Length: 297
Ligand code: PRT
Ligand code: ZN
Image (cartoon, rainbow, N blue to C red; front, side):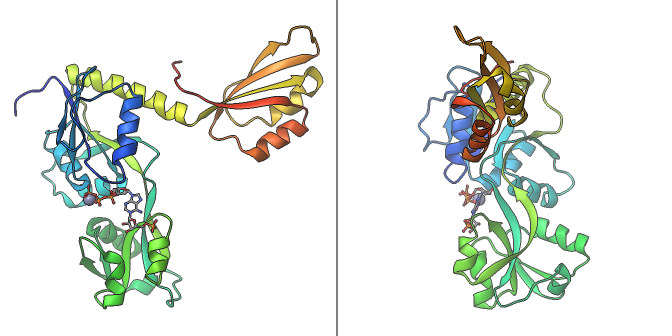
């Protein structure tokens, strides 16, 4: 294959992961020229291009070296690893991206009183994930029939083609609508950045490293909040004890009020109303929770 000097990222052309993946890349400072209904998007500022494909094709494209990276569900990546065959390059999950969360679960008809995997012995389970299901059944020591379907897995029990299913669940609404009930979780999934186990050692490798650093910043910022509040010196200790996790807060003097302090704290994750109310009770006032847009330590 002709050597490339530009990094190429595969992502879903149209589906659940498309918007959030593009949003994340944009936050990393990447912009692309082509409209999104085309297959290839040329990177304008940085030497990073996009290939828009079906999510199922993404791991294969990385393994073949057609793309350097891919944004794909962990469910698709792990299924590929289990079913691709020994001659295929193993892939790595470089980062978990925090969107597209769902789980791969066993679901059974509502009337079945499911207690343990052993009850699946000798039953037929319909799935689009034969690799992951097969591996789970092996670790559970259960032998069951795996019925591989490419879509509409949830109606298999009603049609009589399977006794249970193994499918992605998010809200659980689809299961309820089909008189099914989640019985066991095989895999907690979310979108991940997938790549080769060994990163290239050329310009693409340098760009990849830069991109990973920016991505870490974006992920950290997305989960961070800046908490600002005022407190008197004698309630400072009680207020500080209630602050959500993060580095040490910064304290600033308030002009003309020697007893008062302004406190600034970077919090990892949401700050809930309940937490704010507790902190207020401990003596804080004038509280603000602000989103963080960019962060460079
Ligand atoms: O065309 P292409 O092959 O690219 O798209 P696709 O139809 O295969 O994928 P898409 O867009 O449906 O999903 C892409 C990825 O999103 C998946 O591989 C998962 O990693 C992730 N994801 C997150 C989900 C869901 N949540 C999800 N709820 N993928 C599918 N579902 C389906 C599930 O299969 C079931 O039919 O939604 C239904 C269940 O949803 P609830 O909310 O009713 O439980
Ligand atoms: Zn797909």
